[in-house]
Image 1 (cartoon, rainbow, N blue to C red):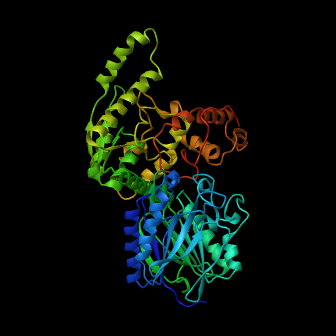
Image 2: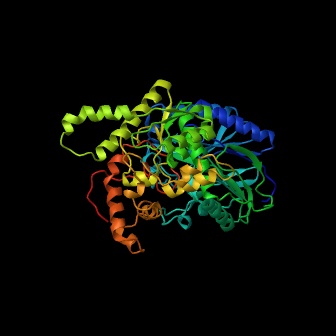
Image 3: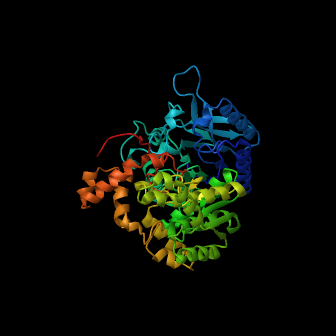
Length: 549
């Protein structure tokens, strides 16, 4: 059947566990779609719950309150159906996990159909088999003479689109074999660089394979370390793009998937732009959903803190970002001036709080203990920890969330000070390699100087000892980041990386540093995931281990 059909797509930003707030959000989107002439409204995966709820589902009242909210939502839906994601019970008399990742078809005040997710991912950041039982069968929903296939996120990520086959079932093929006129997918697919383009290719391929339009509704927003980019889309039965939703913003639109695709809308594939938008969204949601309204951070005059400040000012507004520049005896006046120039360009407040006197006081206090021992990295770390103390004091006094400013390259090899520059509630750029830090910073300056060019152009330095430069300790960042990508993201062995032409001593030094510093990363603030393999929930390495490879 190819009759016209207007489908409302609600690319919305749910908050995990906020059932009243999510119901309000869903009803507002539903009514907006009705006004635009929708005949059916689709929302993202677990849109009533927020994704991922993780162990909240085990709380005794979580699922009952979810079902109570679902009943209320159903009572507000009239003849135009609403397809909404939620968590349901698995029948207690049947073996298996206690819950279902589910979608409900709401119509005329009732729950008309319940659909269970079939493929439950347990890799990278996903752990759905911990909670959910998969569907036994995939059945189309017959409505108004149409046969509608409904899938939930991973159900369309079959072996053709993964690095290896994870599943022995293909829900899309099962639905297609039973005859469908259209395929709907409720999704909560987190962002990483390259993911929007991959999805677009995959969904177009599915449409061409099953020869029906595909409606893909993805979440937008950030929950903890995960950023959901939206980029919902609709294809016609030939895989042509009928509608491409914007990324990183809530969008509600009505689309006719049975109309031929008028044009193949281009997707913004600028890496730096996507990374920046993802980080801005990640900061905004992490801060506001956590109940904060403002942040503080240290401004060193370096590029990492400058980029973090620019992201925060965009996410929260300049008036909600507070900076401290804390020169040590080894800080150049130029770094302090760069911090104030940045603050002026961003419109944020910055205060200067020197740590020289505090540093001398700590050294003097520890002198009897350290007598006869030369100064070394201990004194460098003292300065970083004094800065952490100052920033935490400001955070406590004025109720700011403290942002850490370290990048992925440094965190990977432990070039950071625990209880010092690692202090904070959110590690904004901890999944951004140093080379990408420069790319995004230059992108920010594409029209005018926001981050001082001197900050971008000067050699990076922690300025914790005389004439210190990062490259005194680390390989050049271009080499470091390339090796880290192979070792961390692609999980290649040192020998495999060396075989690609990298110098053996450098590779093995990086390998040892990454492995040894796992204990630091386990104590780091949560970081926003923007690459395919971030430190944190998607990379679960033991702290104590002796494997070398």
